[in-house]
Image 1: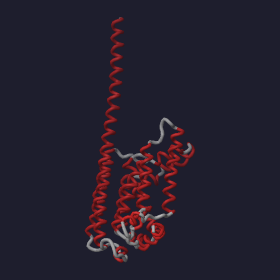
Image 2: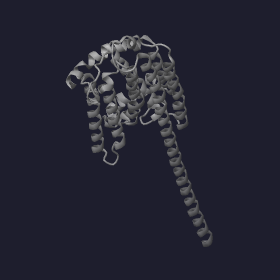
Image 3: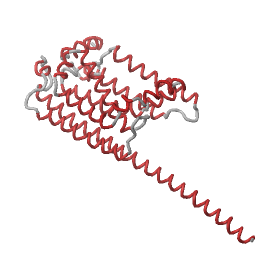
Image 4: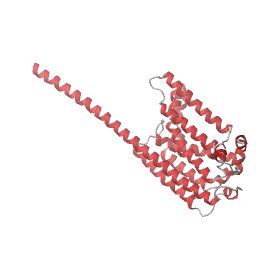
Length: 319
């Protein structure tokens, strides 16, 4: 049964049909096994593991933080669930399931991968020649400066989300496996660009102060909410694929679409709210650390002044 469902998964996604599971266990076991998804995820896992071990061996006093490594693995796991689990099997059967998939990729996996600081790890594991001749010139190149500018990354993320949901691309992706894969690559790419400046874990041509990061995230919440609301309140089914797919189970197409809009609205808001809370916490920690540095500097200056005053007093007594 599991093998049959896995083998049928590409056909299911291409034509929007997935068989009704006989029970909950059959639903949970409806995983896909696709090399074009599994191999890149495995390669990303192996590369980070190897790079982290190499850095730890060469710099035992300053290894790659363990929590960043775990963040990378967690991001890959979320992608695996989004792209190979029953979510992937039924993403073209139900719009609501498809929406869960996209939220997992853009709002969970992408920030986890950004928190892992893969660019920093790549710089540390590369040879000095590669860093100087390839990586650093690329990081400071004009195209990357343009595409990584926070206004551009925010606009790209919002624009892609709105454009794909209200254009022929969404229906085309539901009918074509190739376009579907390209759509996923597009979503993940713009999501990584979106989270890169706000996470701030990797070097970037642009560094946003903490207040700007909070504003960046705060402005991202309403555009996500409005998109979910637009889908939720649409009076007719937006995508012909979901309106015409033949199935005898699950919610009706319009009810499924309304559920998808609600998922985007609530799920997106929760993700942004969590990011805002974390961003404020990081900002407060940074302010506390800066306060400690200022206090330490003032203490050193006061100690120097007191020592100088004692020296001056001894000189006066001797004279």
